[in-house]
Length: 375
Image 1 (cartoon, helix red, strand yellow):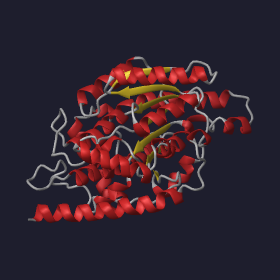
Image 2 (cartoon, one colour):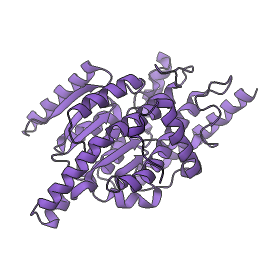
Image 3 (cartoon, helix red, strand yellow):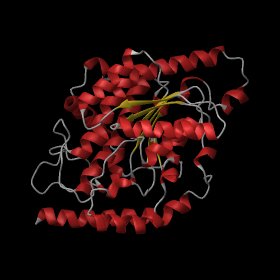
Image 4 (cartoon, helix red, strand yellow):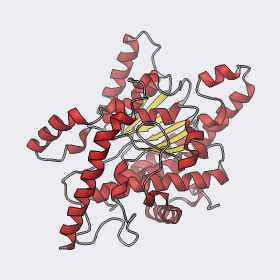
């Protein structure tokens, strides 16, 4: 009975948030340029890793970074889909008369800690600098029963949060190298302040860690269940709540990451940002029956944002020289209109953010050398 009532309440809240965003999100974006290429700044010479880049928001984000001159790593589960995208981006660059961009395909499955560790280890072995990390990959299994990752985590929490938690901390050494490289270049350059600003700002401030969350985090109105974060108990699971908890975790993780980086790596802290992309018509309905998928895309394709519109907040936060300062008042959270916004109350809970960090360290078995000290 309680499980049924919980599902009903969740569905009602879900519908309210959904309708609010549908009605107001386009109006709230009226100040934005129509095309993503007219937003943010250059990424020339920067190296970026984008997770989940082969469809939807991730594909548009990766493509926009390529067009801005970034060296882009497509971190994806399917090598074939990654290579197909790489070829398409190379073809588009050639057709536009631009130099051949640097694009790599690397295998990464956020639902497997082994895959995350292998990806990070291979990257670190090359001692390459990293400037932009876009934690975009995510799952939302609408209508599907509870499922688990390879490591026994609830699928949404494991893929959307824990995988990215481990990835981000594993790549911090590379991000530090990227920040040091940019700081040295900024100190040595003789360019005018105007020229530096035109290229996205100077120095380490151009390094970014951008995580894609969602306004759905507000559905986890009681916060993440400390006693049952993987929603194992009978009747505890529904896909909406599982997704909401994982998106709340994205925001709380960024909140605590900023706090710890402020003490250990102050040049990186301002660039740790988290975004709500808007309600976007992507592949989230792929697990529904065929007729429901058809109905979803037929109706929602007319009401929701397209993938390019949904990628604007990620691209803005990754490249705009103004984004870090703008985000200071909201602990890194941006809305789909590319403006700082205040997330729901559970996402502003410092105690919950601290608990999540400690729990995540334990869940992924984080190497102590990768952890960040509590200030």
